[in-house]
Length: 121
Image (cartoon, rainbow, N blue to C red; front, side, top):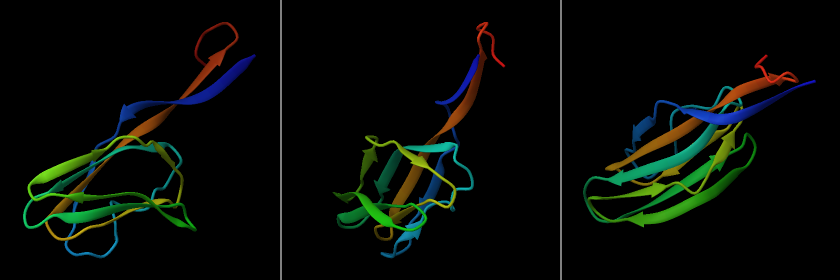
């Protein structure tokens, strides 16, 4: 008897993007496989008055607001109470303003298989 499963393991290279206006912006690009989990979102506000930043998850058909907060000038926020398993066609969208920097931190689901004898397959 054998079984297979995925477990969160490797941290992927962060995706960083600078917002240029108040429009919703896709951070990075649409996801192409089912192996990534959004583990954290870091938001840094470099200058100017406080900005309200909103994070949306688009699941291929529906957009959902998952987080919103006012970020003070020269401050940052870290959203870590996720995770969101991302599937093919999903997107993370952020609305804020100029001088807001967004970093997405993903973990990668590693496939694991084991045979009845205890060895990996």
